Amino acid sequence: MNESPNFVTLEVEGKSVRLPVVIGSEGEKAIDIGSLRRETGYVTLDPSFMNTAACYSQITFIDGEKGILRYRGIPIEDLVRKTMFIEVAYLLVHGELPNEEQRRNFSAMLNVNSMLHEDMRHFFDHFPQGAHPMHILSTMINALAAFYPNVDLKSMSEDIDLSSARLISIVRTMAAFAYKKSIGEPVVYPRHDLSYCANFLNMMFDSPVRPYQIHPEAVRILNILFILHADHEQNCSTTAVRTIGSAQVNLYATISAGISALSGPLHGGANQAVIEMLKMIQADGNVKKFIDMAKDRNNPFRLMGFGHRVYKTYDPRAAIIKKECHDYLERTHYTDPLLEVAREVEEAALHDSYFIERNLYPNVDFYTGILYRALGIPENMFTVMFALARLPGWVAHWKEMIGGETKIVRPRQIYIGKTPADTVDVMENREPLLH
Image 1 (cartoon, rainbow, N blue to C red):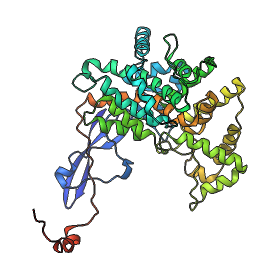
Image 2 (image 1 turned 30 degrees about the vertical axis):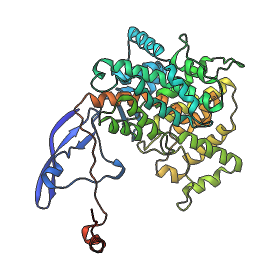
Image 3 (image 1 turned 180 degrees about the vertical axis):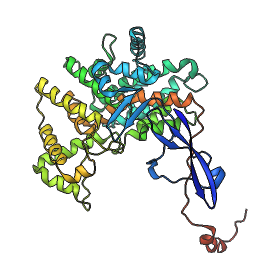
Image 4 (image 1 turned 60 degrees about the vertical axis):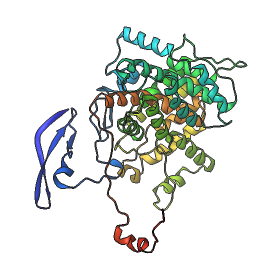
């Protein structure tokens, strides 16, 4: 981050206020309004923070107009081709890719911390049959603070690497246990001889009556899916993590808040919504009908998996996962009729002026659901998969936030409610209370 000597001048009620211009390392420009209220009495209003930068960050860079996504300066395309998920997790949390020794040590730390405290395992017995795995995961991570209490800010200077590794590792065990609980099967413990993604697949699908065969291609695809979702700048859940963490809440409770934010259908549940939409279109058989419905302002139907708050061109993650989806299904001879529906929908939308003019291109959620189906992941686990992938990004943002001089997050508001003049009659007609 470089501070420009330039200023902008704002005229407010006959008074000139000089506000500094800040320029990021990729040339992004911002106006620092930190002194605005103090000098003028005014605040800015930006619903949903569409034009507000809430922090400085060195973690992820996005250029929505050019379709660029980089973690710590490295293009997402290079990371997918040349790294594994645990290396990307290390990159996000520690700021650089690990060398061979660091990779081995980090992998060993993940392995050692993959076991869930045995007393916590019994918690799963008290969730009702059919409880959503995302709700179970959020609750269980919040409970970690009781079993590992040394995660407050006073102790994190020494334990932050251990606590981060424990969380990144143990969350996959919790997720797999939650799934097994939801289907009434016995849990499968992690194995020391398996990689991060292979371990998760084995805990999900191994069974005493049907041993699971781990296929390298499935492990490779899961690594790619996790890398693509590992971080995405200041989205809803990451902002929740930074907001909750700014109150000096412990790491586990903070991450639990991020999972809760991710559970909403407009954030982490988008790929499940895509699958539900494709099923509906498949049952009807008329793609054009649904394209026309999406274009009708008076129709509540929306084309899920298209468009993005940030990207105004093709989502770079979508470009990667689209090719990987086609290649994986072809190599494994997996047939999914929803893929053909997805192809038809994408083809129709990309050649329709309505979608072209509004920059509504397929985003990463459009094809990930089909890939998860091919891996055997049930739809109620899609959002959980998103949480597993995003956890290193949340930890990185939390670590960056507590390492600075961050004050507790406290936005302003513009009050538009009643005034004393509106309520004077109400209060005048009330008798005083006798105490």
